[in-house]
Image 1 (spheres, rainbow, N blue to C red):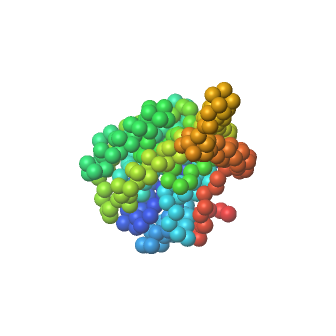
Image 2: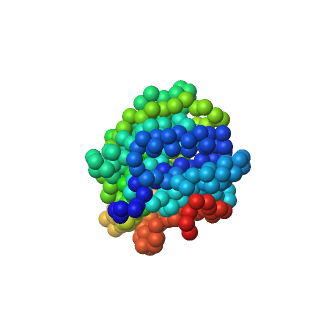
Image 3: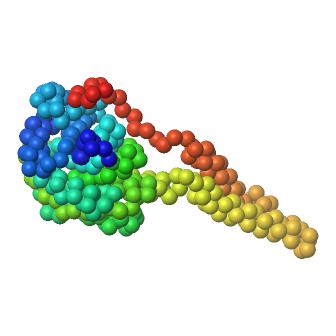
Length: 325
C-alpha cells in the first residue's frame, strides 16, 4: 500500500435509482466526515432509462470523489459489480445497493474487520428485514441450501453490503447472475477467511424492487453451476470421465453378457438362441456405450476449454466521468 493510495472504494451498481442517488452520496459523505479515510464512490449505471446518469454527472462535477460508469444497455448486477471492481483503486472495496436500504453507517466497522481482523471479505447479514414474507421465506431457504452446498456459514449470501480486500476483487470475475455467490467464488480462488456482520436493513424509501420471484429459481440454477465450476473447472475430465467410464462399463458388461449367453445356447445347448438385437438389453447396452463415449468427448472438450482464459463479462461502457484516464 502506498501512502497516497485510496483507503476505500465504494462500488454501487444501480438501475433507475434517480430518486435516491443524491441522498445516498450525501449520506456517505456525512459518514466520512467523521471517518478519517480517503475514499471514492464508483456509481455504475446499468443502462438506466431515467435521469440516473444526469445526476451522476452532476455529482461528479460537485464532488471529486464521485466517479461514474454508464452501460449502453442493462446487463445485470453481476456485470455492473465486475466493471466496478475493475475500476476500483482502494485498498478495501465495499459494495452496497443504491436504494438506501443499505446503511453507510456500517462502512467504518466493515473497514476495520478487513484491516484489523484480516478478513479477506466480510458479508453483511440483514438479520432484521423489512421485506414482504414472499421475499424473506424463499431467501431463508436459498441461504440454507447455499450454506450446505458451499460449506460457508453465512446467513445472507445475497446481501449487497459487503467488504473485500482489494486483491479479492481483482482476482475474481463476476458474470451472469453470480453476484449472489461472490463468497463462493472467493473461496474457490483461495480467499477462505470470510466473515459476517449483522447490518441494518432500511425500509425501501423510493420505487420498487427490481427483482422478482424468478430470481430464486435462477439463484438455485446458478448455485448448481458455480458448484460444478468450482470443483471441476480445472479438471473437467474428472467429472465427465468418471461418469463416462461408469456408463461405458455398464454397456460393456451387458454386451459381454449378451454375447456369452448367445454362445452358451448355440455351442453348449445346441439351441438356436434369440437374436441379440431382438432383446431390450441390446439397446440398453448400445445406449450406455454411446453415452459413455459422448461423456468422454465432453471431458476432452472441457479440458481444452479450461486452458483458455477465464470468461469475461460482456459489457460496453458508453460513458465515464470522474476518472483520470
